[in-house]
Length: 322
Image 1 (cartoon, helix red, strand yellow):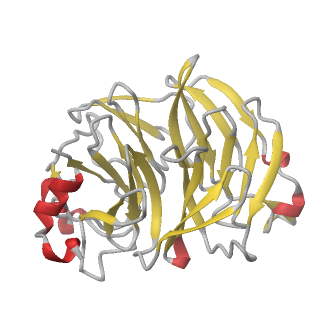
Image 2 (cartoon, rainbow, N blue to C red; image 1 turned 180 degrees about the vertical axis):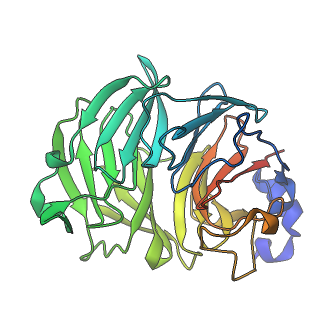
């Protein structure tokens, strides 16, 4: 009842939340590498290091994982990074910060240093064939779309473009188990991207069940914990910051949820039907603060939101939190 009576800005202030109006879109915040006319065909992800550097993956063998400074200045390309990191994270652990990425094309799971040196390579054959559903050249394959790292170092990877199973490995790459899938009680339809959700004890997995228009919770042991939010615009990506979950919706919006799943803020909404959910929206139609097809989301330490698009030209948004 209180929520119906109080103006949204006052309510947000009382709850310690930032409404959409308080997130400021930053125009033209990044600068491409010299001589590069566009970022590159983007069907990947985005992550932010502890230094505030922004890493973004594109489908370009010569510049597959690009790094931008906090002010948007182009810094470098990560050497040896593959051009099919559909989903990746930067994880800080005792040995430093590392890139963990799931390859869509080859089905490999990689751990790299921030400069691109390979630390771990889990082949797709590590997943038992009984949990695979895609077929290529007469063989069952995986089509990994996302992954994250649990506090104990275990790796969780989703086969979001195929079986919708989540596969668990230990920190050394040993296969442990698989769970999820298209059958009940999960009933997934493109479990596109996942993240470890540390807001709970023990931590959980939060997942974007895209074609079901919902965001869900799973235990780390594979128990379905329920639906967090539903009726979203094809939720495709998720990142956790503080008490909030940032959801990128590929049909043209970004939604921020609180721990209970209530909407805290929404931004970037695009009502042009011909611009959303497609990778072909051209730069002359781009507008500051208006998204077209969010495919990756990330936050820096202060809670600014970064959004990578599904777009053949490549585009990143930045929304600053006050």
